[in-house]
Image 1 (cartoon, helix red, strand yellow):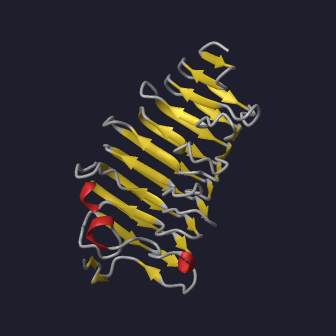
Image 2 (cartoon, rainbow, N blue to C red):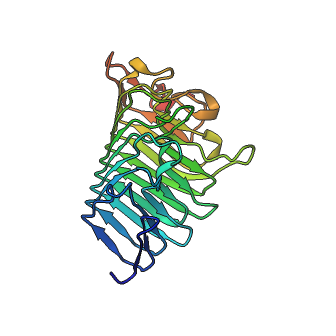
Length: 268
């Protein structure tokens, strides 16, 4: 295929052209293949990935890439400790992940490591199951570093059994250096399983607004429930006008978890 190179020894497919679509490939064979995207506007769809003896990262969007879409794929990390994230973006533009089954990550599910380039994540309509499954791992469903970022996490279902994981973390700080979240929302997700907290947003990094809304969550196997809470990692009534929590439902009690309002005005 023009715009694609295949390294059979390393079991790597590299997308060098623009506007390339990889459709219907089984990358789980031969110890597991990886796809590296170097071009713009690539789509990977209807594919099957399994991390095996080759320890290849399933999808890496390289620094030169922009606007990568992964859709209708099954990506199984096989609990491999040497693969940090099932999907990693280092480029610019928007990484879109839709209608996928992401499971058994040794570390993180989706990593946004964009090196200061403006980037966005659209994560929608996925089943996300079991991150941080490698011994000693601290896996997140999403990991952000640096920024500036825009974030849309909607209509996903999560499940977690075993491992050590947090949920959708939007915390792009690098040590003492602040990250940047231009805007974002986490909404209409169904959140279950054993995690520390289902969401985390570093409040000081928000430029415009970040909304956590209309999520249904089961806190029975979590330590913090929907959010960590407080002015640093965010939660209802965290005293910031930029972080907004509204109409989230505790599935055990039916309670609405949101910012407290008096006369229509948030009391933070």
